[in-house]
Length: 57
Image (cartoon, rainbow, N blue to C red; front, side, top):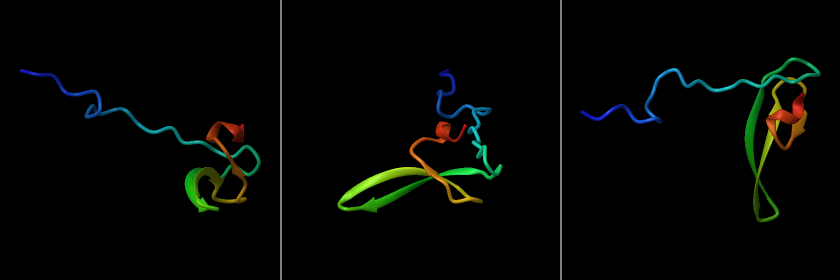
């Protein structure tokens, strides 16, 4: 019998990033501007935008 695939395993949670300025949760957003798709991270509280979630530290 085959084992469970690595993508179907339980216990693999997501990492939550917090803004160092206000303590709000950081979420990824996709913005379409000037003909290109751009991915940015935005704090829900203070609306600060960065390129990666790790830039909020």
